[in-house]
Image (cartoon, rainbow, N blue to C red; front, side, top):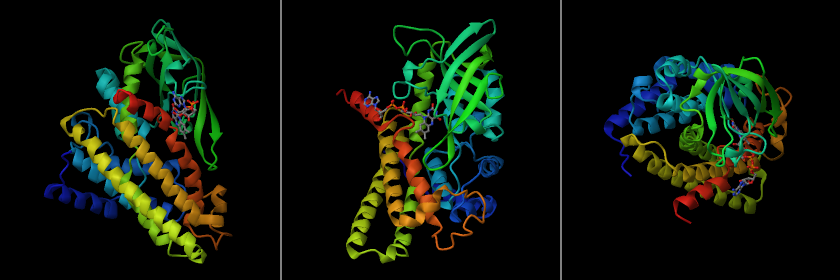
Length: 398
Ligand SMILES: Cc1cc2nc3c(=O)[nH]c(=O)nc-3n(C[C@H](O)[C@H](O)[C@H](O)COP(=O)(O)OP(=O)(O)OC[C@H]3O[C@@H](n4cnc5c(N)ncnc54)[C@H](O)[C@@H]3O)c2cc1C
């Protein structure tokens, strides 16, 4: 591991911090602090502000519009973004499909899709999972049959995050039935406005609309939208998943959440609890703080090889387990603090006046409950924990 923070890095940190304090839209930072939920417009405004500065795609190679930062600078930038309380970028376009496009796409595909992603003019969704094809992703059945210069797509995707807001979706589809199910899978990009694409909302237990079922009925997609070779999509999909699993760490956000837990736990309603339960809470909070420290070291270990241009490898599975289990442990402490005050989590909290009628409710409490419910999904999406453990075991030759 060789990620040393130099004086130049510290100057970069000061520059990034000053940007979030003075240039970045402050109205977006104020909303979560007021217990509000960010809207799509807020997220787009945030990403367009970063794009205007040239800072939306820190991980992209410079030739495609990345800022040319070192791995250390990228780490510092993520820390400063999260410390400022700015929302993380929507990953589907910037972090997931873009590396596949610039690594395996044609020049025409790069010219067509990358500038819009880089400037947040288009939002993307990830169409991998299907009913009966989640952990066992290679069992996917959505078909793409060649018809001249087009493919005709039929089938469905499920648990598709933010498909209702997306302009494009990248999908794994079956172009051939092969004895080895990983063969015959193709990676293709579909304009969400194409006739035959339908988005059906799935409302999750936190009361939010994040997920969808997306159906494809006779959807005609030009062959030029296929990335790479027909039937080789599994290799591109795995490349993407390793990028995805490296993106879950959010160390600085977790450090801020731990600091906030410490602050909140000294105030009402927690102040009424018995000494025994207070001690138990403090012990669990200390344990979580140590887990966040261990996570930070693990992130640095996973990032270090990337400094020499390597792509993320299977070690991203370790990071995924640690990051998501720690995130859940934090939400459990938040839930405990919120107690009965968390009940209005299902209220519409998009407006600044959401607290009208809930004056006695601490601002953090409803978000704490919604956050707890939503975080249950972290150990499922991007490959469930059991699947990550299988990958690690295989790597160790077990
Ligand atoms: C909030 C959320 C957002 C999501 N967003 C997207 C998205 O944008 N795009 C997308 O394509 N998908 C998305 N998904 C789907 C996600 O990737 C799948 O839910 C996940 O891969 C698990 O698949 P499954 O739900 O079919 O569960 P299953 O595969 O049926 O697994 C059920 C249980 O069995 C265990 N299990 C399965 N196989 C094994 C095995 N071989 N060894 C040990 N244990 C095993 C699993 O770990 C799990 O605990 C999202 C899911 C959620 C919850």
